[in-house]
Length: 120
Image 1 (cartoon, rainbow, N blue to C red):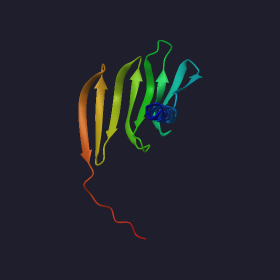
Image 2 (cartoon, one colour):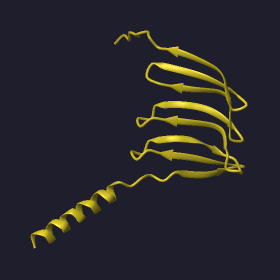
Image 3 (cartoon, rainbow, N blue to C red):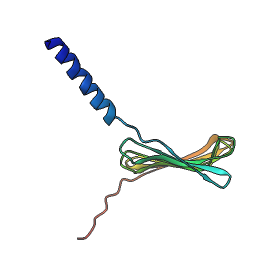
């Protein structure tokens, strides 16, 4: 009897945790000839946002965010190929990457080493 009770208890905990582990489904919306896509973290914050063309290739501006909603990257796609300027943010660094023919052409990096005083 004790073993059966233990097994039932283990299964009930498993079912409880399985129900709370739900993921948020991506959102897709037709916008003209493009499909707008938004992907989410489990906490509901937007993870990525961008567009697909009719062929299912990445198209236009795509943005990526961290778990707190801070922007991590922004860049452009043309028929699935990276083009133009892309920006990547970290805690104290901004990287600008120029793409040509979907290959890295130039990389610039800026570091934020200054401290800003704010008056109350």
